[in-house]
Amino acid sequence: MDQHRTEVAFPDILAALDLPRVPQQARSRQKRDAILTAAAELFEERGYDATTADDIADAASVSIGTFYSYFRNKRQVFLTLYAASIEDILELGITEIDFATNPRQAIRETVMRALQRDKLFYSLRQAWSELLPRDPEIANYNYQINRLIYQQMLVAGRRVKAQGLTWPELDLEATCWIIVLLLDQALHNMPGPKETSRAELERHQEALINLIYHALFRTA
Image 1 (tube, rainbow, N blue to C red):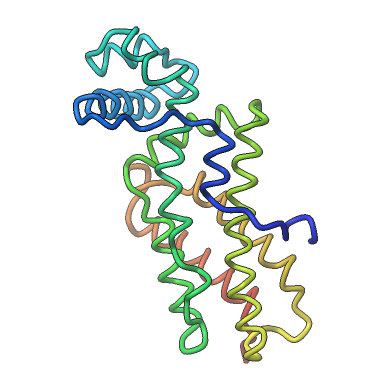
Image 2: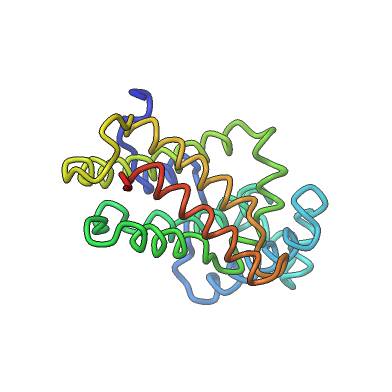
């Protein structure tokens, strides 16, 4: 798993995406935010391919010229939205979580915080699924995000392994990477609150929590 060890940081990932600067003037920020809000709603309603820059401009009540003064294209709008939605996941503080006292509960709280996404995250899932298979830069972005989460998880995993809480024969690096990939799939494919009943959603979440717990922690 050496290929996953290179340290990355979220600001470095954002810099590589060449996202537009946030305007300093309040009026300009309001127009920019209106474009982003309109785009998120259209991406949720129509998907990425069926949404055009003209559609976004019309929904935001701005001219197409104004749209292009803030964003190069709709792809840059999407990346700006997704960067904002994913930042909360990277701020879960995984490296600082205390797994020693009650590891299952610690995992539950962390997973629930990761899965309790706001409306923005769910509105972008269809667009993300359209872009990911065909856009190498976005695929690489997704990989970099997963690698960063993996690095955080590995720090926590090494700590609990040193405390004797994991399976003695556990391949920690491989297991952490598989868990990250599992979480990635869950975040993008697990039904949202509008798509399934609360009971079914909780059932899926509990299954994910149990998988992570039994994969990492030694049990009787």
